[in-house]
Each structure stands twice: as structure tokens, then as C-alpha cells.
Length: 334
Image (tube, rainbow, N blue to C red; front, side, top):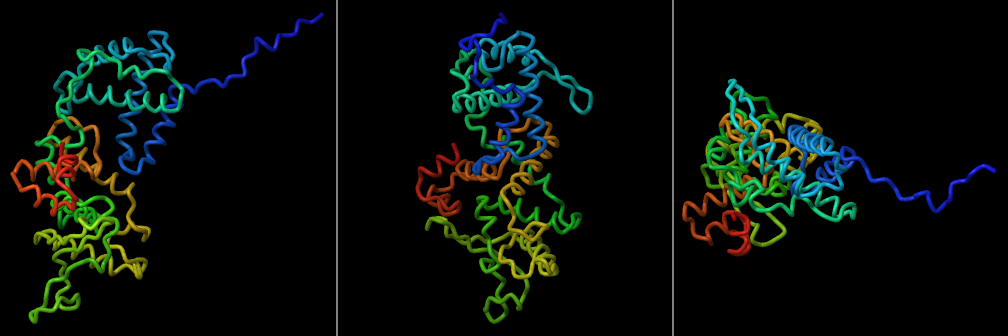
């Protein structure tokens, strides 16, 4: 008689995804995050390289990725700390504390997501002894390093040397850097919100001067309703963008100030890609590591922190940034 396997010995439980497959799913999940999406191609590549290095480390220890322990993480970070990297000019230097923190952070994000989905029972990165965990160089990774903050404008598109969409990007970056606008305030800015330079008779008329000097900002909360006035260089760049915008028939009838080349309202994805690649360029110029996060909110947080360090009164910062109470100032800046 032919032996038939007992049904009791056949497992019908679904097999867990491979480490590579789960990472790809996590990355797709993070791309859709409305508050901190991971959208820049360079960031995808960097996170992917970190995860591949981690999987190779686990493979060398014959450990399935869902069974990784704090000891595995500690050994991984210890090896990373001993590595050396080459700079663009050929110099060799150790992996920085910021890079070590970034490696830990990527692993932590992925394992927290796996635990949230019920795929693992522990988050190995969260159980590290304090001595094994990379030290944070900044209490809040969403605030830019002071050197990077000062270098950032050097990475903006150069006025007079960029195309029309480069001019649009310059206006957006300067609105973020000088006025701390949120992504939604930028996206929802309408032509009717713009303030035009008054004519000689005192009337505000677009036909009179064709020069924008500021904008009325409107938000979902009363505290977000405020008026900002532009520096002369920003006025000039805004005029250039608006002149180009008016010359494009595809933009006729569109009420938003900032539009994509396909005549759509500028998207969150475009804003994050613009800001992240600008921060990456500034970091290369300053020869310092990238921050853990590179979105528009990071620029806003850093600007609020700068105002606090300049000893602006809390009420003035609240009015400047459209925040509803003093606690909001500290929450954004700490």
C-alpha cells in the first residue's frame, strides 16, 4: 500500500515574506505617508543599501530576518563602526555617528512595521543596551545641522541661470527657508491670495505694476491666517515665475500659484523630492552627513528653532509660523 502523508503533518500556514520582499513593501508604505513620505530616489537607494547590508550580515550568522535579536543588531553596528569610507577627494574616514544612527533607524522602522503587522514578536533594535546604540548628535533629527542650514541657500537654483521651472523651485525653496510655510500652505496658495505692489495712487492692482510683494495665507485654523511680505529678491523670482505661468495656455483657468509641468496643482511628492535633493546637494557641499529626514517640515522646524535662538518672543514666533499656542512652538522646535 502506498504511504499517504498524514494531513496532521502538512502545514497550511502562509510562509513569511523574504527580507527583501518585506523591505520593498515597507518602502511602498512609507511613500504613502502623508506627513513624512520617503519619496526621493537617492533616499530609496540609501535605505535599500542599508537593508541589503543587514540581510547579508544575518545570512553570515545563519539567522532568518524575522528572528534577529538585539545581539545581531549590536554586532552589525559594531562592524559598521569599524568600517572606513572614502570621500570624494580620496580621504579615508570612519563611518560617522550620524550614519551609524541612520543605519539603526532604518532597521528600527522596518521591524516596528513588521511588529505592527503581527509578523514578529520583538523589535530587536529597541532592546539594545544603551552602550550598544549609536548616540544621537542632535536631540531632534528633524532639525538641520547649523552648518547645513547655513549652506542650504547655496544649493538653491541660481536666479538668472535656471529655466522657468527652476525659477518656480527657487520661489518655493525661499518661501520655505525665509517664511517657514507648510507644504499645504504652499500647495494651496491661490493667485487671489497674492499681494501686488500699490500704484502711485495707492490702489493695489495687478495691472498697475505686475509686481508681487507678499501673500495672504489661509489655513484650516484661525491662527494660520496671516500675511507675509517678500524680500526684493523673492519678489523678482516670483514675478519671473508668474510671467512664465501666464504665457502657458495650459495654465489658463488654474487658480493655484504653483503648478506642475502637466498643469496640475503641485503635489506633495514634488515638494518632498525638491527639498530632499536640495538638502542632499547642500550636505555634499558642506561635506557633512545627511539628516535622517529631508522634507519641507524639517526646514520649517529649523527656522522656528532659529527664531527661538534669536530670542524672538514666543507670541511673535506664533504669529510668524501660524501656530496656535506656545506649546506648538516648542513641539515644532524641540
